[in-house]
Image (cartoon, rainbow over all chains, first blue to last red):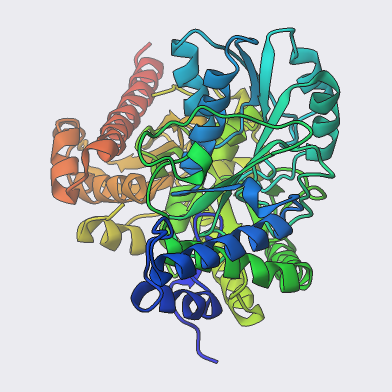
Length: 407
Length: 134
């Protein structure tokens, strides 16, 4: 098989649509194209039936009691906004305190920041050096004003899988609503909203080989029933939680993507983990001073986030432009600040600058892994030959002993 | 981010990568930047008795623009007197490489590296003269 370049290893950013998903979607563009809200004819009825079947499939993947608990949105950013702002608004008479973590996605962090401007208080719980939240820290942050805890299922940069079940136990015992942004972990790590006492969960299709532009918010309907204030005004779709004509082909594709994971998710995770471990081993066998960022154990199968000491991440990405990956280096962002996730874990800034995130997925092959490993090893060696820091390290100079002039 | 052709060309074929003996009295060394900021440049010059830069070497930890800026800097200063080399401005480097605004700091760092290497050489030369004419 010939390799197709650039080799895609950025599956945390997005994934290609699985051909089986695309085939499931196509009839809903041209044949079953009705508006799911049209009650007066068969076009509307069949669209609605497809949407309701889709709700049930998605509910099944996350262990929800019913498809009625699935509220469709445009994606996880909207789901996060709806969950956090919707709960805050609805329950504000009960309290004004929210707990989240420092490593959440910006959709969660920025929603919380917005609420702070509106008089809410937010506690941002830090993570350990392994990129994991300690449930005890969540518990310690709870006050009698706490109405919501939001902790992600798995982190998008370092792939760490958070102790959702433990946190769910705490929030349930205290009667606090628990939201999780489950985007990265969905179908890749065990996730069950009932077993884990999750009340709200943000989901998206495009990270699981479904289409972009469609997501969902799981909203628990019983024990306890969670209420939201809608953030969008209009036709009162989705039981009044989210107005807007439903994206029927997208929803059908989302459900098909979930169906594939229900059937193949466990085996797929094993396959991807083996590829990830192969890539990691091939790199560390050939290179010194390579550090894995985040827990090795509690980690998404496809995630390999490593820092190549003495080599700058963007410089390295330029050298491996045949591979699509991402970096925690400042240089890749407009802000010139290195990754806030890596810094929250206490990583030295130079190591954050040296980090590369490989995100393996369904369509990666062993051949691709071998090619990438070889390329990375060769390019890191080349860049280290050009790095004054590596030369100093080899000469036994402690880089921390030097007075660097920050610029 | 899209790089200019010149940045890519210097990045892929960097000129004058290497090291000189820092203790050599005809060598000036400039080490600028900080690992925490994601860029460190080390630029070295070998200066003859006439004050002409005979050779220049660099090693850089940084992005493609940082590597290209230092590579270009070594190319430009070779054959110049230290006084001529000291007049090189970061804006000239940025213009030559068509650096985007977020990468201007790479050219600033290259200018700093040239100045710092020259300063180091001048310091060594002054110390040597002080020894010769106490």
